[in-house]
Length: 503
Image 1 (cartoon, one colour):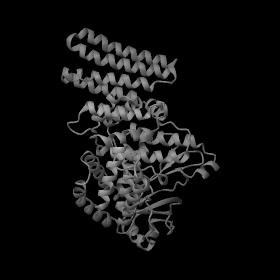
Image 2 (cartoon, rainbow, N blue to C red; image 1 turned 180 degrees about the vertical axis):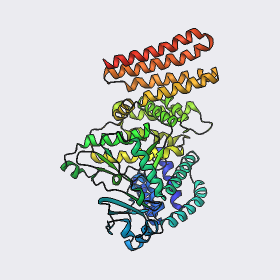
Image 3 (tube, rainbow, N blue to C red; image 1 turned 180 degrees about the horizontal axis):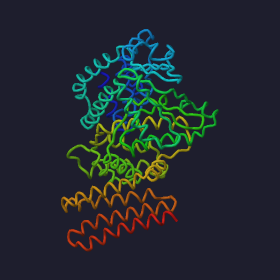
Image 4 (cartoon, rainbow, N blue to C red; image 1 turned 90 degrees about the horizontal axis):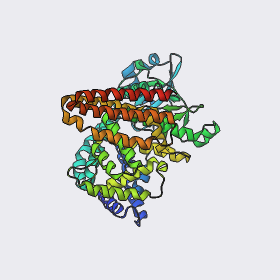
């Protein structure tokens, strides 16, 4: 508990002084105590510390830096203790595999990985650590008991985010205890990303997998942060960083499932620069509506628009009940001004996250449970970029993803469908959609800067057609003929845009 009290004191001072003129040595000393505490408490708390290391809205920077040192690597259990787990689920090991190397390849807190051979193919066998399930169950039971008491010492404007993060953490830990869930996650993401070039995801060997064992094809590569080896292989590291961000943010913004643990040990690179992804135990899920709202939040921060930022945060459930909009907008405006002199296209993901985090720490904001894994993914991926120190602009990558993956177009089409459905039910709900379309049009302007003309024509035509269509549904209620003409006009506009694109 002294650790929680020290953290509370440090965070209050850090927020009040915005990290300036503070006693850094004292912060580091307290952060080191926190690091040692997490290490001493075992695997569940090591993972909890790793989660906290990506939450600048909860911890001061010195704490983040110390907890980032936590590695999910522990001494391996002897194979004599692992063998019974394999044979209990798969039968006699000699019949299950042609050969298995009893020397562990990697040992994490929850599982151990071995290389084996099956039907003439090299495979990887991931086995749950002996007794780990009981350890995790007990640690989570204790954690659930102490959370309500610990929350009394957490500032009220931080309590919701902390509780949401801990709830998501416990849920994820329980999922990681079942390798069948990881197998399902892997297969789903592999299917979603099957047409993505230069991305490799291993295949699962189903008849050699269970709740406690996951067998996959063996796919070796160069660790993504091994700068020396990548340079020796002639890999373009600037393109590699871009590719990594495109892969993970395409999962996030286009599909319903994304890999939420992109630390360097889970990403390798082949000789031709392709990415290999491992470990799908930790995944995040975002529905279509949440993804669209997240895109709006990104764009409002890029454009330094506090009014739209507040609206986007409200839509995402990031504002506490009864908030004063004018005060929060003023606070956001002041935070955004901290980037005065920085060109918009040079604002990297860390700058955007720092902006959001600093603001969240000063006002009654909250980070909903479903966004906790997104925050973790983005933060860890940024660490990969910083290792390479290459010329990389996240905003440019985000803009490319939104356009080339047809995310913007799909969003418009979905909104039009929903809007028309609401109109059929009631005129009032259709009218309420007009501001949403207007926001779409405003957001698209920024995304179309410095892009080839054909693409601009198509997207502009899409936006105009969408606006005309939704407007026409409203007109239809008062004048059916005019409404029908407007709807037909929207189709003509879209057709012309497609024709112009092809020229």
